[in-house]
Length: 352
Image 1 (cartoon, rainbow, N blue to C red):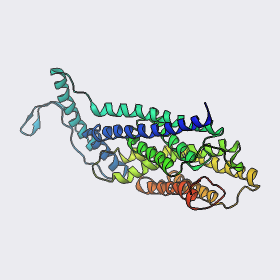
Image 2 (spheres, one colour):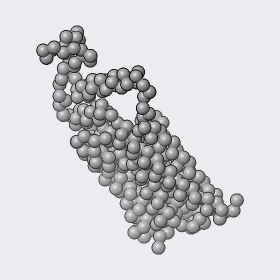
Image 3 (cartoon, rainbow, N blue to C red):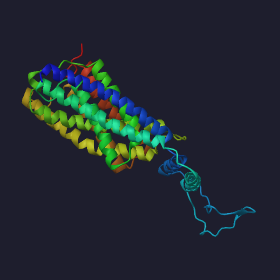
């Protein structure tokens, strides 16, 4: 297949990835909006208050199915114990489940539409991931080089890395609640790449024509994908607030963000070091105060401050999330602002 046809195929793969991500986003949104039960939300609210150190209301457990006379239960139960709101909600949930069981015995059970929507959305996300991957492979074959030599390719690769981080995490842990937000981020990123950053497939400048692009830029892409997923979780943490919400518990969002950054930070550190080694080979110096170098280091310092605060100062909750989002802002400025608005040796933008 000719280079022109491969480039056209890459563009079609990008369009397919956008469409699949958008449809998957809708499915994840349905699952998020209608798939979480009242018990789930009550448990999350109790977990939020416990994580914030707030007292949880103490209540007496009531035996399910007991007959009540004169305000007292006639059923024999264990000694009273203190339970959280989540435990009380569990009793209500059990009662609801029992009612559902009765309905099941008397007739066929209605299909669980939200659960099916989430399953279909996950399958579509994998298909979108495959299309995104196909776009990168065919772009690389069309250009006869690693497919992240300009801003367009770099953004396409970061979207792929962010979706990969979400799907791989979903294999080990149930983070489907992030699906709608990761999908919309990837779809918007690909749309921005096509609309603003698109560059015809071709060779790169001599300084970028090196095996270092496979080392330095690959590490930066993977780290950026993980940090993007963490940023999405951090934004949802602040949006969720203290009131009732269909979003998951803030503790879960904070945990996802922290684990992603723990994996991403060593990769970003390696990318910075590899970039210095590449700069010495290409330009004869390890450090030259180029804007991209400066902001890559600022981003490293910001994420190091977040991890240091979590590990030593015991920061958690809103304060730690704000520090994480400040670091994410540095990362996004390094990706978008420096490449587009500030002139330097790292000419990824190729935007008129």
